[in-house]
Length: 125
Image (tube, rainbow, N blue to C red; front, side, top):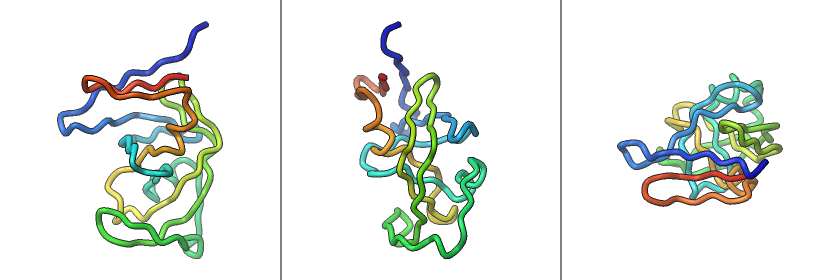
């Protein structure tokens, strides 16, 4: 068995989107190589079984909508097709401050390699 490989084509807007499973629950994310962590909308975190209290939102973060407070958490597992990365650092951000969850470097750095070429993003493990 060789390395597992997933190829993702860029959408019309130039971004890469993945239909992943976070803790075995489906979540759509935009790949963001500039994001240090995985950033989850609060509703996506909740659907993945991550339950937070208002007091957990103690980390100031800068989003496209300005500064907001986020809650730090760890995701047990993120799967994109047949590639899985476990124990991923993430921030949960209120839905009104983040339009789509972001798949950042905390996931990407768990891969053997990833690259973008000719409008295709390749994950390999």
